Image 1: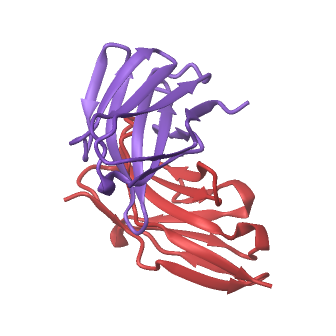
Image 2: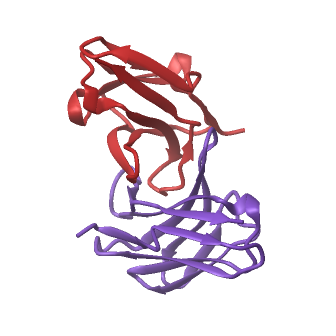
Length: 114
Length: 113
């Protein structure tokens, strides 16, 4: 089983719908992240959490919210989806005791907003 | 402003040929540098990383990268490319061990038989 699991892997929805992307991890890491990937733009940080009580905005948080339900679970919500939120979303974790902040990624959730 | 630039959006090389993927960064603090690879339908996998010490770092799958502070570069190299290396490659930079990375736009590598 994957260390970082994202559900759903693919989702097609309509404008205005609420969408939740879920992430769970078995790596035991305190730090979790949500990144968005768009072609030609690389990955951009949406939100990150360094522990259960800590939530921080990243570069592109507008239109998104997150919930850290437990050390192992970090969900991303789109309250009212719009077409320009069509993208590939990645959850990642990192070990705060590690030296370099290396990220461990899930396999991604592809979201299409019509 | 902090940024990472990968000048080559798409590169095609023949199998067995050498490879160099370019990465330039702009970062105020001492950079922590990474190369990740993304195969189709997969997440990103770390190839190698640099934060201090020897400026030539070895990674998985036969890849290496050289940190050149004077040129603000961290180019990825492989002496002989295999067909399985076809993927998208991302350079990233961060500060300390925060995990808040800034990614380049990515370079897509195609390998010709």
